[in-house]
Image (cartoon, rainbow, N blue to C red; front, side, top):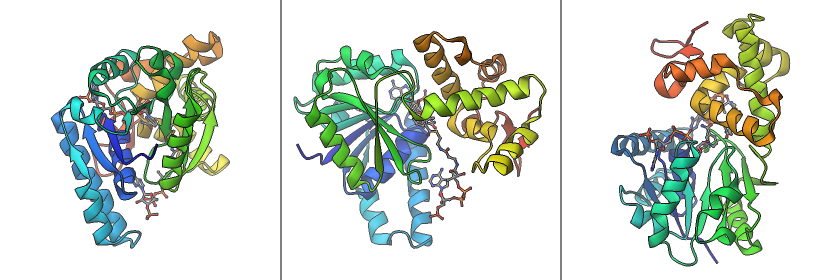
Length: 291
Ligand SMILES: CC(=O)CC(=O)SCCNC(=O)CCNC(=O)[C@H](O)C(C)(C)COP(=O)(O)OP(=O)(O)OC[C@H]1O[C@@H](n2cnc3c(N)ncnc32)[C@H](O)[C@@H]1OP(=O)(O)O
Ligand SMILES: NC(=O)C1=CN([C@@H]2O[C@H](COP(=O)(O)OP(=O)(O)OC[C@H]3O[C@@H](n4cnc5c(N)ncnc54)[C@H](OP(=O)(O)O)[C@@H]3O)[C@@H](O)[C@H]2O)C=CC1
């Protein structure tokens, strides 16, 4: 089945990026969020990012205009459900994701493929609560979506070959590269990346280094484009903690124990860039380390 329309639930940093690249590649997009402010902010950000691509001569202004005309923002999940492919990109909490799929189910077309952009949660378990485990899979973009080349595709135990092939064709049309991952906690990228970020927080917690020296060490000493604490702020500390909890619970190994300092930042509501404070304070002209 050829996918023509894509419904996206959750218009946060991932939802807006997914809407951006889908619309630019010719898909009709329906973008939903529980918060109308989030939808407005997403549309404004997509417009800014497309404008920047025009300025840098990556796309033409006609490309930008037609991409924007293909994005329909809607508070109505029933409209989203009418898409050929639905990508759930809401907060990394399993209860929220189950609720979204439950609300979508009554209005889905029989042939619609349901997917989740989850960073870590079991695809098989999410699928088992829907009416179509064979048409359900993980569709995991990396942040920032318009820049990052990889998409992880994760089959649940019941996902059929037709569904996988249809999603692979979408990744190819986006000009991105797919990596196939088995359905185990946090899949490939976050199974490796998130324990490194958690270890950086332990390094801070134990006073081995401060925010600046830890980030500088990994940037200059290991050639990472961002230091691990800067990257954690970029991803969202709530998301990082949620992924560590899935690894810890799912693999039952103490090596995945979330650092208490990470928990403390999340408890404070210091979630990183999205709340303007995390390991850095972003409220001034330049980010200032908070430790
Ligand atoms: C948690 C999960 O489940 C999985 C994940 O996503 S893990 C996170 C994975 N992502 C990473 O590891 C990102 C690491 N960081 C980087 O690669 C780089 O710092 C970066 C690409 C984000 C920025 O690169 P940079 O060279 O420092 O900055 P900059 O020169 O400003 O940007 C490079 C390009 O990206 C674009 N860009 C940067 N941030 C962007 C954003 N948030 N949205 C859209 N475009 C963006 C810029 O416009 C620029 O585009 P051009 O090449 O067309 O000019
Ligand atoms: N951040 C990252 O680097 C990456 C994240 N992901 C995954 O993508 C998903 C989204 O993450 P991200 O975009 O960073 O998170 P954000 O916090 O930026 O955005 C999540 C959005 O979902 C909204 N939301 C919450 N509940 C609902 C609901 N019931 N219906 C519709 N929308 C809802 C939130 O609204 P409100 O704020 O009002 O609650 C918020 O606008 C997560 O599963 C995450 O693990 C995947 C790859 C990378």
